[in-house]
Image (cartoon, rainbow, N blue to C red):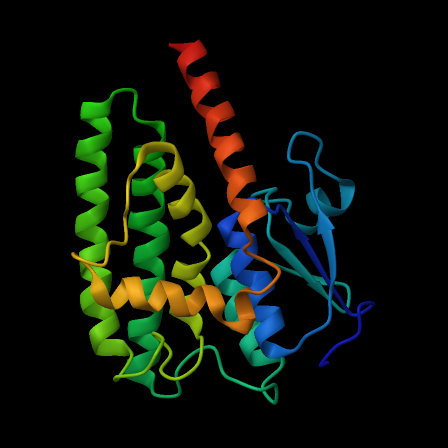
Length: 233
C-alpha cells in the first residue's frame, strides 16, 4: 500500500456519493487510509477545523494537511501518489480537459437532477423530472463513446476520473429504481452506459464501498427526506 493509516485520513459520510468516489479512488491507487464517519448533525471539531469554509465532507487529511471538495481530492490523490498502479486522469491535455468537463457536468447537472426526481411531490412531476435527467444521461452516453476509445470505462481499459465521479452515484440510481421504478441508465436508451454500469459495479475499485446494504440505507434515507419535505408543505 502506498501510505500508512497514520498518514492519510478521510472524513466522510457513507451515503454521500462525493465521499464514495474518494474512497474508491484511494482504493484504486492502493492508498491505505483511516476512514472517519461523520455525523453532519453533530460535526466534529476536526471536520470544522479542516473545512471551515464549507464545513462538509469529504475531507482528505494527508500528513496533517486537509484537502477539500471531492473532485479536487481526486486530482490530489492522482498527483500525490503518481507511482501507484494507475492514473485517474488521462495523460493528454485535451483528454484531461474533457474528463474535467464531464465530471463537472455530472456534479453540476445530473446530481441535482436525480435529486429532483427523488423529491418530486407527484407522479406527474416525477415523470417530468426523470425525463430531464434522462436527457443528461443521454449526453453522457455520447461522451462515453468518445472518451473510452473502445475501452471498458471512460478512462479506457481501467477505471478513471469520470468513472469514479459518475459511478459514485450508481447506488442512488438503484435507490430511485427500487422506490419509484425510475431507471436513469436503461439498456434500451443508453446501452453503452448500461454495460459500463455493470462493469463498474464489478470493478475492484467499487468493492466494499458501494454495496446492496448501502442501497438499502439510501432508500431509507430518501424516505426520511421526503417525509420531512412533505411535513413542511
